[in-house]
Image 1 (tube, helix red, strand yellow):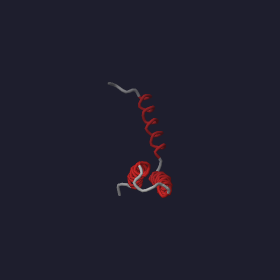
Image 2: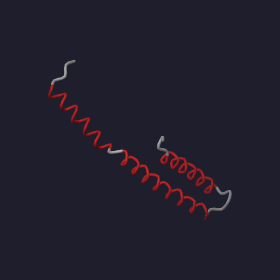
Image 3: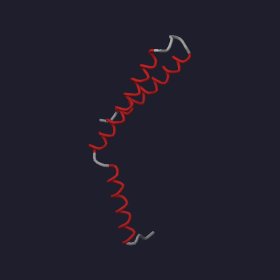
Image 4: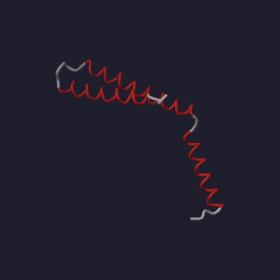
Length: 82
């Protein structure tokens, strides 16, 4: 398949725009920090909610599972692969 010069220019322009949307490494870490901060707030809110629930109740077990899921998401949000 032959690509015309104008089509090649369009492809390059699209790729450059896609790269600009991804941003710099600093933007990446900033997004990761904001996401982990939001999740940290949710984890703390869930812990506060659990304080008011009676031990052994179905509501507390459900809240504990939700807390565990939030903590797992927080671990993933903080992981940068470095």
